[in-house]
Image 1: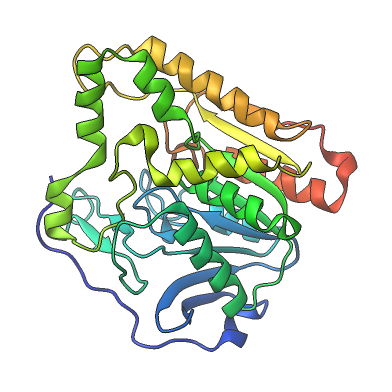
Image 2: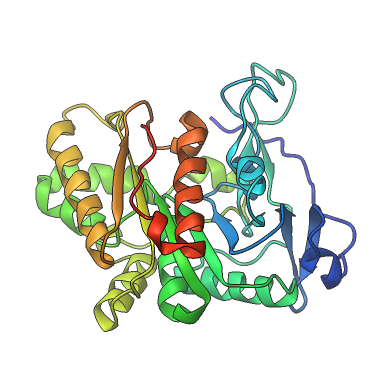
Length: 325
């Protein structure tokens, strides 16, 4: 449940573009034409890795450890910064969950550090924001895009829109553009309606955080965000870039009684394999110790996958060694 106490963290000043473009560690906001996006960059070298978080997740999900004490493990952003430049940002309407065991008197979540915008927004809107951010912050390409869950839709549509700028990609348990169509086909009508109602709207969150990111507000099978990616894939194939796909090994919890877990996991596995056909020689690894949040469950595996893609961009002959799961 969402307690109706949130912490306002909108940043007071917009930093200079030169600061974000330098090789120094950077955290602050960047103006993209009348509103600001919060950006964090660390590390040196190229290609630049851009981390795209999943639905509702702030950019600091890549650097904050939700499962273990701070400093116990190397998380994705600092881990990648050890071998190349890496950046993460807050989309408007995202949030950081607060662990009540660590902060018993704190709020349940902390909102995005970026300027709020009217919701809902489509994947295309979010691609436009990312492109504006990279230009305004003068973050040099080419880019390796890393997308978790619904963030994979943004990464893929960005690569379709700006193919010359993207030289590699890592998809972390990403949302396939046709997953809701396959689910609708597999579920009896009554179960589909139950699932759709659970997924489309969380009124309690919206009451507490009206500016919250809303991914699924239309009927899922024809949601504009997934449709845009589906149409982009149909128009033009992805360029032959290094592509690493990580999938969850621990099944999703059943959203309601009677959920056909085995059938739905089989659908997701098939769709994950289908994503691997987007480019030759894509790698697919199942993270056996992870649920959906592989970047939190096994950050070392995500770092290793990104390292392989970065190395392959620098030297294509390295694209044969897979990390341990």
